[in-house]
Image 1 (cartoon, helix red, strand yellow):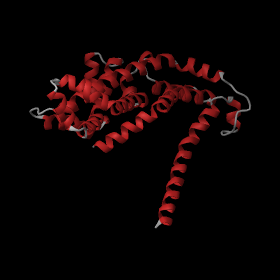
Image 2 (cartoon, rainbow, N blue to C red):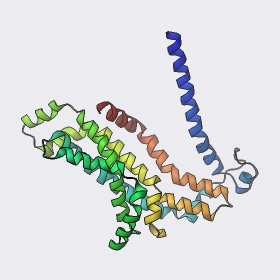
Image 3 (cartoon, rainbow, N blue to C red):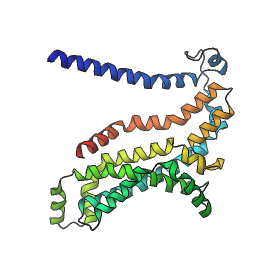
Image 4 (spheres, helix red, strand yellow):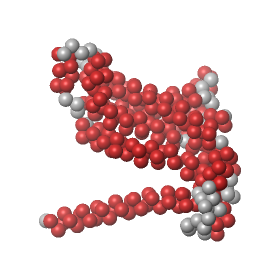
Length: 276
């Protein structure tokens, strides 16, 4: 029996190592080629750089207009994340902690969005947003991304709140705390990991999203990083070094965020699954 467990453990580790290598190799190639010259990459796609060309990043940054793209992503991503966090947190608290009339209907309403594919509503949304002036608008994208991210993250937070001990709420109410005080001083401190994870998920989703951004943001001044990179590749197909540098510029913020918040992210994911 011990031999069988050991074999399963070895196989599991081998599978995990293979997955890690498959994930790391494209990133490694991207980072290496971002500091090589165009001529070297055309001669040999995968190789260590003979000399370091940091000017590739400056050229990609300037040509790609990444300053405006970063600004758009930060404004849209942070605003959508904060709104989603507020809505899902308060909604989950109200449905789980309060004896409110029709709370099951509200739970169904929030989760129903998971059954609606984005491409099914994109045309209707575009014509509606065009009429009210929200096309080529960061505000319009904040509204869209907020609506897209609420259903899944609501279920995530709802599952966590359901697993919280009811005795904590009862003790707070006995001490004379109102619902707002209970939410702010009692529930929020315990829910920090799950809420931090929700904020990270929303921000990353906004950063990487392409379909809605490409449809609703036609003005270059408000286009996001994903759109800038897509356009950059089309305009600079003969300069692979600049394309790899632009790819690094596009993904580096997300990699840094994940490295800095990986413990919080894992804690939030595992606590949410266990509590549910």
